Amino acid sequence: MALRRKPNGSAVTLPRAGFHPRSRKGAPRAPLSRERIEAAAIGLIERESYENFSIRKLAAELRCEAMSIYHYFPSRQHIMDALVDRMLAEVAIPTDELTPLEQIRELAISYRRMALRYPEFQRHFAFHRLNTPGGIRWIAGVLAVVARLGGGTEVTARLFRAFGYYITGAALDETSGYARGQSAAEPVPDDVVARDFPAVAAVNPFFQKDQHEKTFLLGLDFMLDGAARLTGPAPRKRGSGRRKFRS
Amino acid sequence: MALRRKPNGSAVTLPRAGFHPRSRKGAPRAPLSRERIEAAAIGLIERESYENFSIRKLAAELRCEAMSIYHYFPSRQHIMDALVDRMLAEVAIPTDELTPLEQIRELAISYRRMALRYPEFQRHFAFHRLNTPGGIRWIAGVLAVVARLGGGTEVTARLFRAFGYYITGAALDETSGYARGQSAAEPVPDDVVARDFPAVAAVNPFFQKDQHEKTFLLGLDFMLDGAARLTGPAPRKRGSGRRKFRS
DNA sequence: TGGTAATGCCTTACAACGTAAGGCGTGCTA
DNA sequence: TAGCACGCCTTACGTTGTAAGGCATTACCA
Image 1 (cartoon, helix red, strand yellow):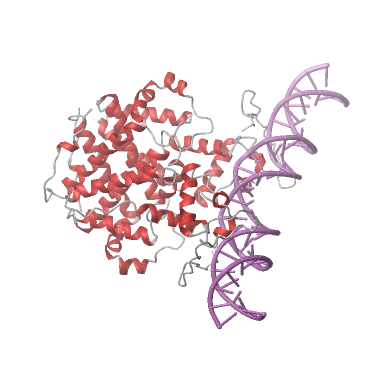
Image 2 (spheres, chains in turn yellow, red, green, blue; image 1 turned 90 degrees about the horizontal axis):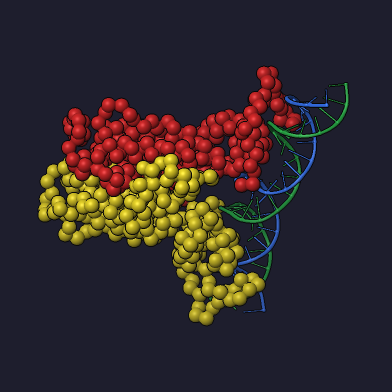
């Protein structure tokens, strides 16, 4: 937390072509950079797991020592913040000619896609305030979309949060929840579940990965219908058949 | 993971009255037990924080050494599982004469109350499969409630999960989210938000703690209305005015 | 009353973690 | 050629979960 050196700050000094710094004893190696460190961190987290990620392993991946990374990021938390901003930037705020409700739908689907691209990192996402610069910008964008429903400040605020509950809850559950999450130390074996809790076993087919999208859209459309009824008739075309549940 | 001794297993030997084991060098002290360890763990987690919890601190709280705890629980994960079961047991499965929809509503509200009693521990809850014995039993109970809506296995499965997304997302966000969660390393200061993102600042009053319940119920009733329309008319009385949004 | 076994808790030790403090070599600029 | 800045490394500290084993107290049985 005391490190304040920012190498790529005001005076940018790019390495000349052909320049290859080397680990003190070792083969030549591409120079470090924020970009390279971030990319390696994402790769490592998603390949191993969020819990097993460490600065030391990241360093090994980058073929440098752990402390070298602290030349580019003052702390582990700063790295995580950079990753949050990076991933949030992939969730585009819709601005086209869809109805407000459809824009929210697109946003939700886009967020889910991002979550499924970085499933391991969702466990970080779920716990942390989006109060990085990129996070605030993103929240402002989403709020603007929700505000287009025309419900006023209070309704906008509540809808923003209620949608957030559903969408982040879904993202977390699909990536770390019932089916794939950290297990109990001594989980109840599947055959015991099948024998003692047949009703639990019965729903299992619909808990599989290929069923997640349909389930997600079902609940999402519950939320959208509620928002529609709360904020009055849609200002523009809005098909209702899409939101029907077809078994 | 190699420890298999279970002191309170088959041959139960209770300490006689007046018996007080003592730390090797120290004052007499109440004997350890699973019960005492669990209670101390909950207290410590909620008082300090989930992230700062450690076996060693738990031991200090109990005035024993870290390894003494391993006499009662084979691993940290086993302790956490016990806490999960303990807290889940506080979320009662409704069985009375309410309509199925009202039962789900009660269940959701009861889960939220539990979450607010143990806000720190929600960060554990959110990541872990409920595949402890108590967890499976609880899931079976909830599934039975959802099944009473009469939608059949598939609809029951999807509604269970969609409600789960919303409820756990809300629990996590209210306890660790926008307002109180782990912050960025260099958060954007409030005055900068107020200046550069007035729309974000404007919704802030509705993001305060005393507004959470109303927001939660708004989204919950969106979900309930959706479930009602999906599974046909309610088999019994069901007021609709309650679910209106009143500003 | 003495011997043996079980119980309950502690001691020691290890590998891995984030990171503070400071050092060293390379190449750029004067 | 001197000096300096940049980029990266070395060392070290306190903290974590927990494996392996030890020791004192008590219970049980002869």
